Length: 400
Ligand SMILES: Cc1cc2nc3c(=O)[nH]c(=O)nc-3n(C[C@H](O)[C@H](O)[C@H](O)COP(=O)(O)OP(=O)(O)OC[C@H]3O[C@@H](n4cnc5c(N)ncnc54)[C@H](O)[C@@H]3O)c2cc1C
Image (cartoon, rainbow, N blue to C red; front, side, top):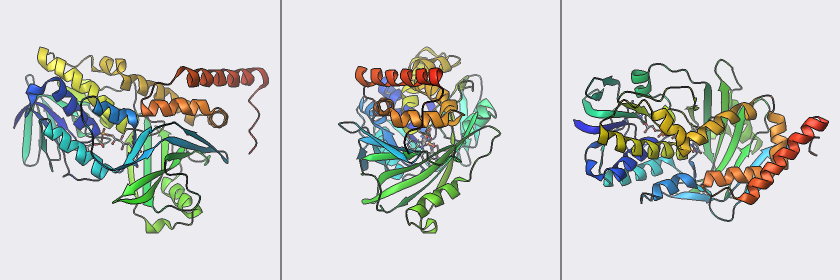
């Protein structure tokens, strides 16, 4: 099969790349091919919390993803035996099932002119002087450019860019269980960093499975290259047992995640990486909204480059860096050392004491302007906290 662009992977990054490319170049209908190794509807281990900014981005080109979800308006942050709840007046995002959401997005993108090839596990990527080709047992697509949107274990990355060791290794494990007494209100995303031996957090998100209100509970672990970590299956089992739930009763889903590394390559001539194939937020493991943002940036970039024929893609890193996704990922990359380094305890105390900081994060998640008020209060809080630190040593512990 011949195409203008072949995109490997029909997750949010690949589908958004196709959607935005076709938005900017509608005459490419039927010439943008998305190759997916599975058949929809397909499961993807994921808690499914999408910041409103992600769905708003799709809305900006007229795509409404018609999949059910639970609307969330805030966050409950738990640490050191305390809890801070921060809510916004309206929705900040939704918790969806990737089984349904990705399928609905795929249908919308096909309706806009993308060609979806399912059950096609790409195993080879070849770049020649005038074209590139991806192939799998039983098929191949030859195109002017290839986009690697094939997630954490990206074959495109390995074949076209070589083995790139990530700076951060992240793992997550999750289960869906019934609600139990003591669960937070169903409009809240709960993040809990209480366990000092977990370089990460546990979560409890409201979810809807086949119309039934359940809670997705999970554990996220981040570790720098070469460092070990606690066993997250054990962490999750402890969380369940603490709520009177039996770990063996629920099917676990476990998967790796790939954190963004600002120094890792993201392109070679005729090949781009987007979404988790390139890297997402390592601090929280949030990746859906970022995958969509990657797709919006790559789609716009490809639309320009296909028109001029300049397919060396040397400046794709600069393009990403200048886009909201690049700025977002750079800031969060800096946050890794802060959240998971030696200052973690102080940061936790700070977040508990300064909810305005959580509010700014929540507004960012939702895509709302941060607002001068919360930003000023968060900055003043951070400045006061730092000053007290310098003048009188570490701030006194909060009452626990
Ligand atoms: C347990 C867990 C919980 C998470 N919870 C959240 C959350 O609540 N909110 C959030 O924002 N993020 C969450 N994430 C992260 C999020 O799931 C990912 O970052 C996001 O899905 C990345 O999107 P993507 O399109 O880059 O890749 P993916 O969604 O992984 O899509 C890649 C696609 O490529 C296909 N593919 C792979 N290899 C090939 C191949 N060789 N040939 C053809 N197709 C191929 C796959 O089948 C898949 O369809 C979570 C991750 C995990 C593991």
